[in-house]
Amino acid sequence: MTLSIKQVRYFIATADAGQVSAAAIELNVSQSAVTAAIQQLEADLRVPLFRRHPGGVALTTEGARFLLHARNIMAAVNEAVHTPLTDYAQLAGHVRVGVTYTVAGYFLPRHHARFARSYPGIDIELIELPRRAIEGGLLAGTLDLAVLLVSNLEDRAHLAYEALIRSKRKLWLPVEHPLLKVDAIALADVACEPYIMLTVDEASNTVDRYWKPSGLQPNTIFRTSSVEAVRSLVAAGLGITVLSDMVYRPWSLEGQRIETRSLVADIPTMDVGVVWNPGSEQSAATRTFRDFLSLTFNGPGHD
Image (cartoon, rainbow, N blue to C red; front, top):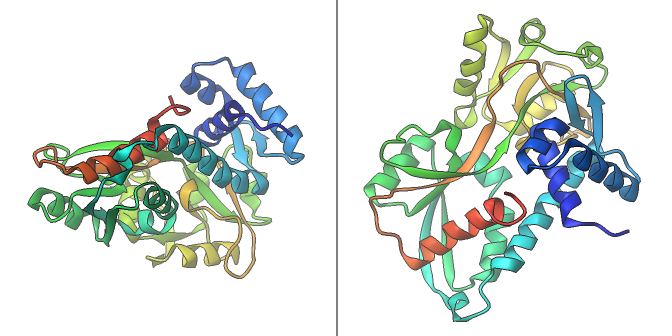
């Protein structure tokens, strides 16, 4: 089997967009080219990566697993292209990086580890804080950089940022839930069901952004700051929720399956990005870490 970088790029773009047509527009290629690449990839892997539905496509269990590998592949390619092969790799320094809970648990570890291998002389100190405290730390100079949910960033007048990934939010349901048989699920359908509300990283505030314009509200039966608690409750059939693909895993800790479906609604993505204070001078080590993240996600293979 020969796996091409193009196939991996097209697969990731389709998984992020949830539609082949939207992925083709983002990649600036024809829709047929994306379809052919994914079909060949599925044939080579001998598993279906997407489940087709009227609104687009959704990852299968195998597709969700492969997506993690695909992102690592593209990150490794960018690292190979951009890792310094000169004395620049001998840079040394200390970088204080503020991170929020979701970023610390579901996004940054593997990229932090890859950076540490490439730049052993640069010490990255991760400091987990709420988003407001991170913004304050960047402005006060107690933090050099931050990696957080930039979709929640408040002080955009004084802080600069670059989005790294945009993770779609989808409906999480237990197996055999009646809504799994509905072709086009709307917020009105969700409002009729018991809802598990995640509160960490201002998730409940984000929920309000798309529920309030609809004139509806979720039937919240439980609030929790634990993603794993949400996963277990949904898998057990006690409620449903809307969360991002970045924190999705197909199984609960108890080994029960969780299904996902796209919604027919204007649901904002969860955007993870790097944030800095443009009024503060950055050290070479800080610039190197920021450039590393930028090139990993927005370098060759992502434009």
